[in-house]
Image 1 (cartoon, helix red, strand yellow):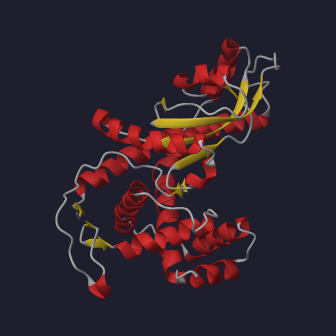
Image 2 (image 1 turned 60 degrees about the vertical axis):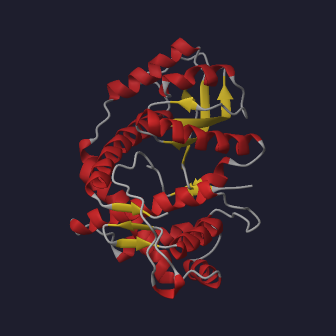
Length: 315
């Protein structure tokens, strides 16, 4: 059994969700959600599943659970909220930006853009539908980067503090991959914990982390990093575990995380500082700190948008 998702980086507390009866729509579809008068139907979910299966190489034999489909629905609802905000500021991504982005995805699949779109069309997904989904995603990414990116700074002192702290952990260096489920508040934590436990069970049964791309936030370190650069609640696992080990559910500042160690170096005796650390290491620490700061800004912004939106989830 496999999963996916990269689109729903933030699936936190839903503040304006109102369950009501489903409304009939054209073509025999009924609305499963409505976001500021924009309807989401089972057709939208089916199309998203086609895209996720294709992009992430998920075989059709894999069965989706109701929880999986609910996560996809939450992602689509969030995308509509984000797209409406982007449109309000007239900040949609350019056509060139979109085509370049799609070409890069096609290249990762070993295809050119024409082949990529033709294969999706054969599966029932029209070019316009593909472009709409990815245009929303990159427009939001660019909007957040433009709104907050220049204001997010990471000093050499911050980086140096993380690097120097590695000496307290015997200079243990690790490269990790993680799945994150953000949560807000204890009630949301309990819901996400049950969801995360099912994911963890699948991983321990042999399901790959990457199969969850598109449904959950997946982060992969680009190089070995000091244990001190990670959330303090991960330190004990990272120190004690070996390469290939998988953590239990870890509660961190980002949310509930499941972590695996891809590579580990316990032989380095050098205490790193900003001055003597390898450039790749400094850049990765800088990236992670910036990413974390931007995620906090994005999370708060999206929470505000949800509070302002009228969101109906139909039963």
